[in-house]
Amino acid sequence: MQVPLLRLQCGVNSYDWGKIGHESAAAKYAAITAGSDFSIEAEKPYAELWMGTHPSLPSKDVETQRTLLDMVQDNQALISKEVSERYGGKLPFLFKVLSIQKALSIQAHPNKKLAEKLHARDPRNYPDDNHKPEMTIAITPFEGLCGFRPLAEIVHFLNAVAPLRELVGTQAASQFESVVQGFEDSQDSEQMAKNKDALRSLFTSLMNSSPESIETATQKLVSTAQDSPDTFATSTSTSDANPSNPAELAALITRLNGQFPNDIGLFVFFFLNFVKLAPGEAMFLKADDIHAYISGDIIECMASSDNVVRAGFTPKFKDVDTLTEMLTYSYAPIEEQKLEPTDYPYAVLNASAYSSGSSSVLYDPPIEEFSVVKTDLKRAGAKATFDALVGPSILICTSGTGKITVGHKTEEVKEGYVFFVGANAECIIESTGSGEENVFTTYKAFCDLTGKEDMVNGN
Ligand SMILES: [Zn+2]
Image 1 (cartoon, rainbow, N blue to C red):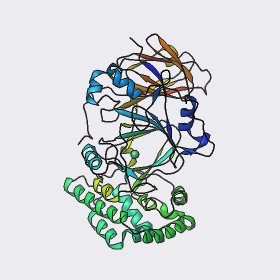
Image 2: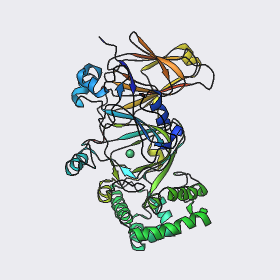
Image 3: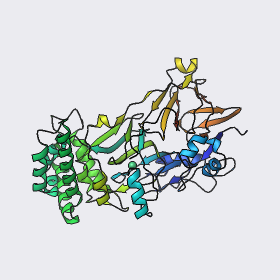
Image 4: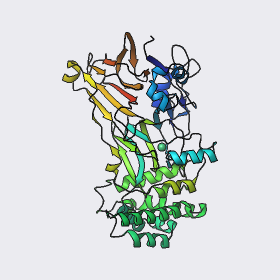
């Protein structure tokens, strides 16, 4: 039988928000395995490298030039009978590298039920009928917005930032305060339901502001950012939950307004957690979680779907009504959005890997479609042996040099190389680089149905 190790050629999208030319990791990674028809254009933005079987940009086997989709449909053993039956002969996940220069739209991804409804109603804007929980792992310092802030912070900003209060309307703001103030952290389920309702109506009234009133408020907001940045200090009572320095937030407001002048997103900012991730840090977005990415290079893994409901920071189709309706309006500090990696027990490190402080860590969101394991091998000869999994994997190298072995097949690995590893195959990676600076880093996304039936997002 053929050894289930394929080197993949992956395509890159050129969305407007991508990093430019050679600055873009997504472009660099695409170029290293590209066919002769691709070369990086110096002035062009490159946003997303796609690794998987999604039909909008399917990866190809380098050797045969067949699409991975075609190959797994031809030979279901590549992804296993179980995965193939459950996910209709396709990979359950889509793995990506995003290189973000400019904010991405404020968005949320529908749960399964809503996705089916939206797709039936409007297949042009909602191309899939699947949900799309997604996980982000920073590979360079990352900034983004994620989930609603703790309510005390929203109350604080409504009072500290005058143009925000004007835009949502004094009456809507007072109504919100009369419900939540004093009960921001209540754990009582009745009160929490009231808080969410109040947040929903305040946020909906913000999102329905007229373009004229947004423009007026933006002018005031931007001059506040320039003249008195201290206005953007978080409240002292909540500073532990969302530490950020007022000058930094003021500068960010100015930067975002430069990217999207007079956009409602500038005000949504005060409702959402501002998240910074250091390389290796991760966050997980459940279906219906609101988010926006602002800058950085990231590894992203998601259920295979391309459904996005957008409402700001975008020239694309906006669907404010669907967005304001679908959100769960849960609010929580950033720490609850972050996903802590744990030791990965199914990779065995050799002595050289152990003694050099090499590691294999697991990012395991509470869904069954995917998990990601990050491996850093810190010395030539350091080796990690991955147990065979029930399902398939895709591996990408983001730094260093090494090799990958499945069965009797061994291939060279460099930064940007991407491999498909079939189901039920043991896989070994080994660093061949030397020197402190030359850590061999790989990310391996995989689906392993065993013991991971803890779906939280499906319905
Ligand atoms: Zn998203």
